Image (tube, rainbow, N blue to C red; front, side, top):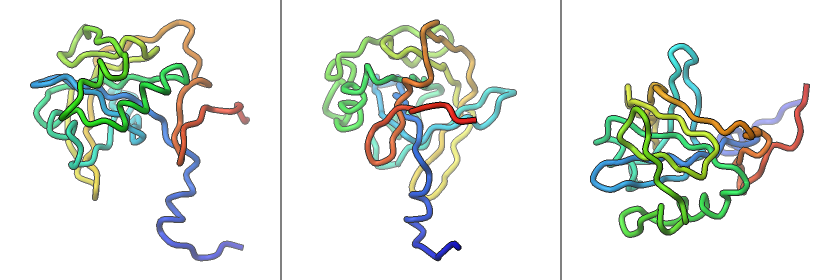
Length: 168
């Protein structure tokens, strides 16, 4: 039997969200750690990232025509934490996190070389959804290391985790 719970308890029922490092160029290259990232369409390939307008990266994303979604693994946990806890207003997050800018093939925003997967996205729309704005981008190029294993992908639900085992 289900019992009524608060809206917060209801939305807390999701088991976790994928962690990505979104890199964006412009007046200043920046990286933001995000747990709001989702594939919105497969054909065309559209990926969305949810960003609070309070964040420094929000202004950069509004001005930019593109962004990159870089998928880190447990090996990049420390860098993910640095990029999620420092502000790009005051810190060069690439330097602070020990990450390397990598030139993208089809967009102007940099990629994160240490991440095993990078998606180059051309921004197609912005959608206001309460306290976050979703930036939706068409994936125009992608890179993936052959050794990439989705089981190493970071998830976030109160703390960082990885996929435990495949069910079904």
